[in-house]
Length: 507
Image (cartoon, rainbow, N blue to C red; front, side, top):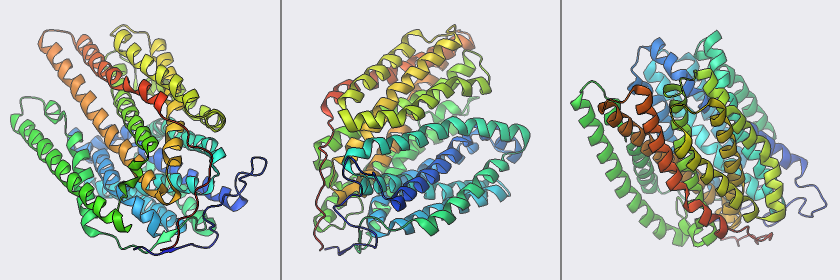
């Protein structure tokens, strides 16, 4: 049985400012939250710059498009492998040590990328960066749930939505400016000093929150997790690989198909064994990822809703730029500007949405959010074609973003608030894993559908523009169909009561 201890500055079962008339957090707790938010912002900002930089990297490093995709694939794979382990790590180690580890890894990876002499070293740098990024978001979510009183969690999660929305909005624009005026290395050169400052401030000011345990890590579970989640994400990233190999390269297409099948089979088998092992280990509180969180019906429903939303959202934001550029003939800069209003709406609306959640609960937000998201996805599927005006796309994307904003904050908050405090770290890890796997699935399937329909239309004699519009239509239609269950879930998910859980007894 795992032993439990309480680090300094931690009082389980209590919340500072729990009275509705007092301050939400003590000054030292507020400082921890802002440092974690700043670190998460830097990590997400770094990730959103890579898509714009890939064409420049292909030219500077002399690599193919397929090879260049490893800069994003390696990052996704690492996230998929590390995030499930964070549930255990956040219980085993203190808040301060996890923050220092995360920012040290991220800063080291950024430094390696800055001075990388070639492509292989740059891929290694991305893996190191992803290792730190994978720890940061679960750490942020777990910390918020630990120190923020229930009646104020919505508004605090609203601050997280600012980070998750504004960083992707700023990233591509910043990358475009740096690439046009300097070089791709400066993307990492700008991020590195900010990361180092955050690391230094966190090492000095972050104190330990929550509880730690001395449970030994189960090595077999780590291996199974890596092959399970890593295999699934890698296999999903290979869907559509045959379409990427043009010019009749049947050998390359066959290899891509074989890689896809083997990865998915290995992933499913390893994940099945992983789940069985966790069910056994959690009986003595030694699980790497405690699956007892799914005993909460509300948590399970919220995670399912979040997975569907992530699959549709990430799939659409991958297809939309391709539609804008290849069908409507919009430039890269105008493509970024077209999605900017939506990103700003998501970020700026976050605190307001959080306050509404605290006061009114989930249905007030999730029902209109689901209606807006589903409605806009069907609007995409029906009305987006080769002659759609750009201003229509901008308005539709902005309304879709508002629907997503109304959904993400209550889903994050209600899911984790449905758990006992001792399960917060596991819940945060599962939230991150669900987003990664569902997002990878959405991107892979919608890209494949778009590519297949476009190729069929082209073979039938359609012009490149008309064929591209047909492919985008098919992908948007799939996203619209996938989104339909969101309306049902919006009525079922509830806000957990504003109550404090008693601290679990020491073992």
